[in-house]
Image 1 (cartoon, rainbow, N blue to C red):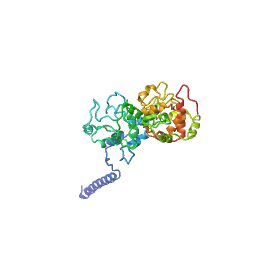
Image 2 (tube, helix red, strand yellow):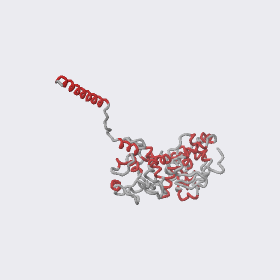
Image 3 (spheres, helix red, strand yellow):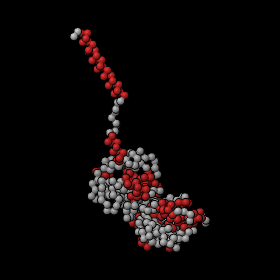
Image 4 (cartoon, rainbow, N blue to C red):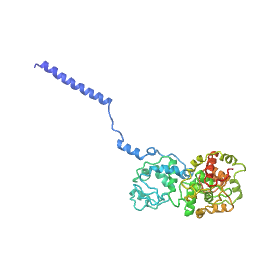
Length: 384
């Protein structure tokens, strides 16, 4: 083979090699793949942990937890708790899971559940007798790992203040003697009360529901009612609602509705569907039963509440506040007008009561729940 022939072959091979390299470079540039900044498996884990909507963004200025809980809904909180069920049990005497049992958690000393292996971080944080008060629970639930660095809790957190308030109100109900509700303007301080007062407090929370609110509205008494009191049965709720009685006639008069003020709602009751009122009553179920022979819970049973004397449920007698009992001694009953006035604005109608429920502003909602409450009897009260 002469040199010219050899050069042609070598040139062809070299040209082919250069062409292959050029094609590889161009295709690599066009179809380049870059490793993700966060490995896929970690991204998926974060997504799984943050089922409430992802890693919570920095929480902007919010109302104090006491303010948020004043309008919280324990029923909604129970739904939020579904995110916790994989690791925690809520029942009295329930076993520890991946996380400790949460019965009686509000007000409980931190890292104190027997038989549960807490992380060193949690034990260290709890040093000094810290308790799970409202403020601490609220801060922890925003993003557990940021609040207590090193905790074993992998949950991403709840960025929405309403979700946290609803959940905390539900957690509060997991007790035979619920912790006192925080004042609406307070951060999270929990006042110490006797079990009876605590029950009243819990009742107020329940009474946040339109139903209890209605029951707890004594016409002439002013009382201190907790969020749980809102869910107490008519008079029981009322009794519970009157935690402290106002003594001045001026305050009592100011709380009473003007003549004819409730006529609009009373005229609407007959035309309302009790089924609509039953939907509103779902807010009360965490603290009250509505069935005949239903047991008292945090608040008294609400069967037969319309036209029932205030503070008259015998099995709940020891749990009524002194103010509510005093109000009942005057013969006050939970008639339609009383219930309507109270449900419209519990704190305005009975200044100083412990019920934190803001009230039902819509006349239609109040008329509907009164129509439903009327059905909770074998012999329903006559319509107004």
